[in-house]
Length: 267
Image (cartoon, rainbow, N blue to C red; front, side, top):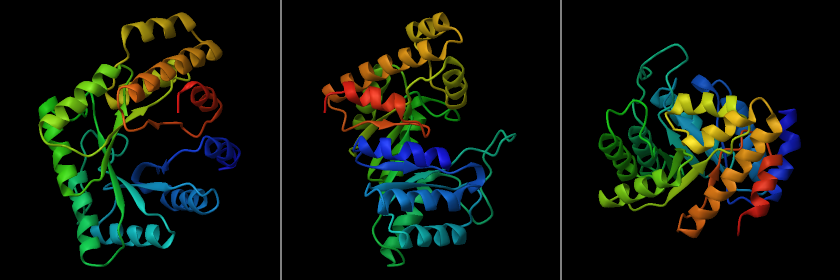
């Protein structure tokens, strides 16, 4: 929390359209997440989106969480199924809870329709290289369409390092009738160890040229970050020039590299 207080002013100075706030496994940091989101929204005057997952929450729990989010003045949610708890291979829905994000989105919209909560903006996740658990790309796209049809306003993608993955993903999504904005998600590389761990968890691939550069950098954190910053600038610039509606940066509560990146991206 102390580190975040130092980083937040720099992130806010970059004038993001919104900041998303996640929470830990099984909702373990849910209360602190709401505290941070409220601070960002009310003190920093930046629109905030709270993550909300199916993990560990019954429908009654979800209603209580939605009520707290609304009471805090938050009007946007990133609706996710969530990952299985550590050590478990498959996702098991909680008792009287949901198995998929489309059910969570539908629940939120039903609560709105019944007048239980006010209007909320909802983002959902999309996977340019498909979700790890999906048997194939087309099945994953159909899952995404279900989330959008349930009431999602936009899609934020999982991280990727080859822009062709994003453009192919958007094209395929449009072909099956998904019309909402699809926002590319970028995670700037800060170290080879970090990116290899994260990509192994989410199923994203490292292009050979990027992997080669990181291997050449070895254990030098400065060289690795320079490679990551340069790559992210190139990715973001091309994405914007070719019509992406914006960029969602996974900043991992760090700001110095984002200051360098945003300084070079045309806005």
